[in-house]
Length: 371
Ligand code: UDP
Image (cartoon, rainbow, N blue to C red):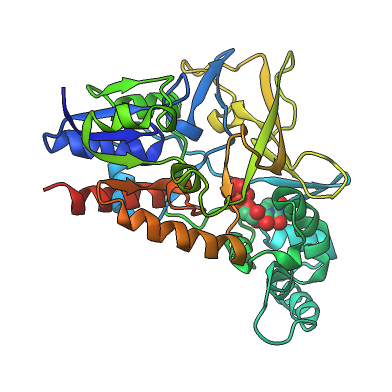
């Protein structure tokens, strides 16, 4: 049987594209090298808790079209991300807001906080050249030292002076008492878990798991007219121009026989010494309840360790510094010559995409592609 599209990877990009193509009457085959669908948004139920196996995913968007699209496949709860930072036992609210400034400096009014920040940002003159300068110019040196530097250097394995400033622009700064991490109109976690949501997107579509595309490329290519490839772009070209760098994440999961470990879904450890970047307590994404609304007696936590990607690891974050961005542009030129292959998603486009942006990109591509 001949398919119109072979979709490599059943993560969000692949699932959106597959759904759209099928809706337009195309024959689609989705493959994934893992034993499960959903890529890095995969969730697995343990003791009634949906555990985010490849890291916490909190859906948020300002894009109404994307929100209406994704809520076809799942109902979302009202979870709002309000992480807590733990700096050597001192707790601070994130993102940076009046609660944070009060704890850091004892300031009470927005005016006092603004003054403090203005005073501290004076050390940066001119356009910030890197993440360190960007951070200090946003919130001043005290917050940079206690809440940004250690976390960022652990997360990226690089000095803040060597990192691009856009990474930190993800974090809002507010002179209000507002702990909502995201400036988003719509936010939540799909009730029943992300895996169920992706299952609904792939409803009626043929999926082959445990299928490695690059190892069986010729054979798999012969099954379809076109390929949608969502794996790492450098691996597709057999690393012929060199390897792109990625950050990988490792999780140490623990099931604890207590109802409440840290009282919040995410606690970031922002000092340099603690080896993990954050601890996720998954039950709080769903308010500690099972599907019937009962309190869950146990809890699952995941300590998150960041490391440089090496072959055999899962790539998570592209490192969009100058060197890697330049190499990616070279790979992109090669990709443009592959007329029957669409490269998409975080790994296919080497881009630090959020989920909503991935959905928007896949929808746009499917719209342009499929008549
Ligand atoms: N960040 C930080 N301190 C924190 C949380 C985040 O300095 O407590 C910085 C860090 O550089 C990180 C970036 O903000 O890479 C984005 O963090 P976010 O949690 O949004 O990224 P995610 O890993 O969830 O995609």
